Length: 113
Image (tube, rainbow, N blue to C red):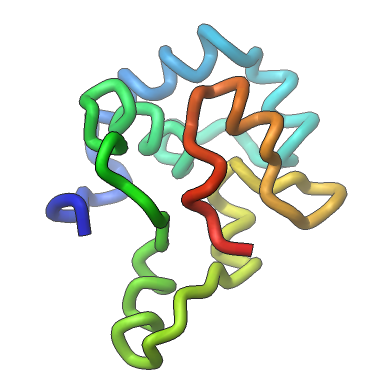
């Protein structure tokens, strides 16, 4: 873990929303991920973390349910239903959207397949 987890509705994500929308329009995000805009979507949290420099030492991203499963099983996986809520999954292909991650400057190599 790179730090203590934040509550998903932590106000720090406001900075992440601004950062993401400066690079990708809300309409384009919806076209890619099919998610309603909610300021606490994971992609905004990661953008806030990126702005704070918290992602610099990250080599793998596990969402909380996946982290707990890792602690219990020793296997690092990304459960698809949970991953779909991140805003970083291509809604059509059901795969991580590497192009979107590149547009946002997020590390593509951190996401499990």
